[in-house]
Length: 489
Image 1 (cartoon, rainbow, N blue to C red):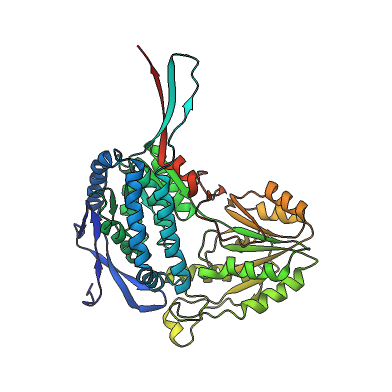
Image 2: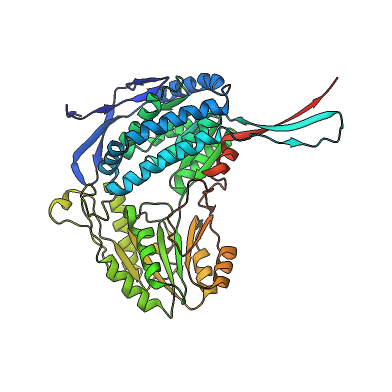
């Protein structure tokens, strides 16, 4: 590969130093808005690089765990301040590398700042309970202790928020971390790790290694000194992660796919439902695990809702995500674009009616990027491929139902159970939905794609390994409970 001399090479971060991979191989991170633009070069690391990072983390963790929670939290406050000062640069890098619009990228980076400060404060919370003993002369209590070394494997769709919401609790609870980000957004991830490096965390407490999932990801899964793996990505890869970790007794946490429904009842505020469906389904080009994918609408309001939805979708401005006024950018890669287009073709082949969109955009400067039109299908049956499989693109499938009972049945009739929304003004419908919906996140009169950082996040069925991320729930994964019994002599 002939490297462009004016493009930066981003190194691995191991034991407090930025280091070149042992094999000196790099690959280019390409902008999805313009395939001719190289955002940066990243290491294509070897298993030797990964092993060094893990061994370093294992040594560093023994001292890191001895610090108080408040001391560990003080480092996170420093990272938050540095990240906040660099919001504009990191957000622009994210937009150039992943294709998310600049306002969305700034919002995500600001969320990362808030997550760091939240978990910095968690260092002051209790880590155990006193339990009554049947022996009056004894003291029995619990304490939460760190796992040790945690491997963090993150996707490309939230290259700031997802790494941080895994790294921050891992660190504050006393673990050392090795991060393997998605190659597609590794430049953005490197800039996030620069904030940790500049906060002067002890050497080896946080490490960063880029490379192929089959090498670095698998290496983390297999390494005997990695005590826990937290993964966000596809359900197919997640199952491999879980099986590999289980086979050697490591703790694992998986957040995987979604096929998230919105139910629109006959008494819904249709304008609100349309706005939330579009925002939840099409922002970030539909590349969210909680994105709306199926829109299940009562027959009495189906035609009106459809008309309003299509009219609004046609108004969406697609273009260069760095430009003002652009509402939707490109798919994150050529591979993802081709995946979306293949699902659109499957929808047409299986008998769904294309109402709007469905094509790659090849006009003008957009022809050199990975752009697809926002797409809406009508006459979708729930056994169709586009109603069952995660597309991860700007595709909405409209499904007509006769009753609330049928709507909930259809909503639950998939292998996933991540998020779901209901639009209604009827309290009984709200209660039935909250009780009967098989999803880890249920929302009323709000889009499916959204969860506050202080709230537990995770899915049911094949969306998750059934642990929860974010909020105080994070302590459940990143620590183990130790029970202690003390009796005077």
